[in-house]
Image 1: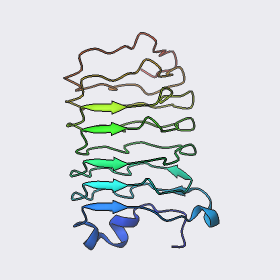
Image 2: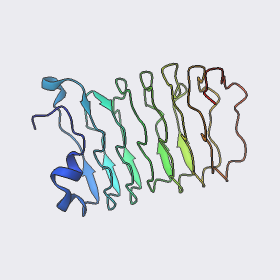
Image 3: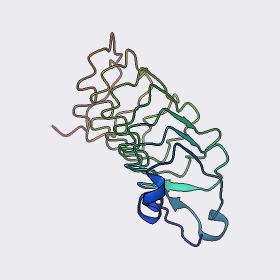
Length: 193
């Protein structure tokens, strides 16, 4: 595979067979030759995928935008030790999936600038584990981050660093099941109204 951009790789290159896949394991390495790669739209709009195993994926990734967007059947993603330390964009990464639980506690989001709509419309999402510094000083947008996550009951946002965020609107819109939310430490001085 001679590319450093896997954008739309599955949906466009092999979409006839990909639409029937249930499990995908990604375990190739190309960054040794090509540097950091993009996984934008990699599995987007593949409705039958239930499981994705990324635990053996070793490349340095810079873009994960729309990676699982509208994977309506997605129930589980195994990230293992997937390296996110070079990622700059996670916009709409899990937008519209069927996930009920997500463990992103090992994610390094220190270089991410865009988290907008990352979990938007994940209506079955009940529980999520985030790293302590999930929203770091690099983040500029958390627009609709958890919007329409109807089933989620609690989100620990106490360590979110929002001082540099410019877009924060509708962040928790439609989160009807949330019982409490600790946003007292949010700094909105740079948020655009």
